[in-house]
Image (cartoon, rainbow, N blue to C red; front, top):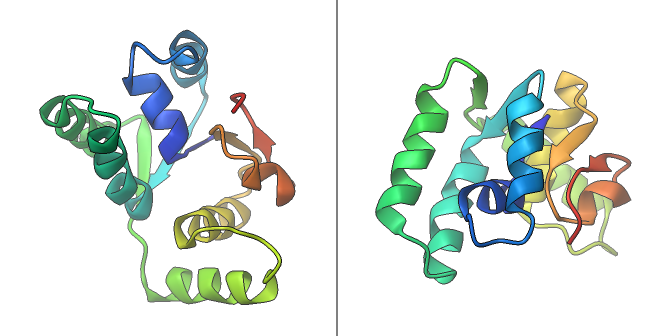
Length: 131
């Protein structure tokens, strides 16, 4: 399962109405994958929601150090593949981070994402949280 930015915030933010569901999905996942662009988005999103940034940074570090989470560091080939995907979908409003997620999910055969983002469904993946 890919851990998307929105899903991580739902898991991290105990006041989010999707927190319990996100926590259950997170804890029961057979595999967890996150990439460096998601982690780059996570901290500013927490800050914009006025969440404790110190705790968000500690959580991000826990993800990096966890043996249960595969962290993909986005390199040039993945970044270029994501740009190509964005160029092929001019009608979509995908972010570069979304496109990187889609590329990685296809490369690794991942079909599900802990996310609230409908873009994942538009690309044929399973979104595990409601918006």
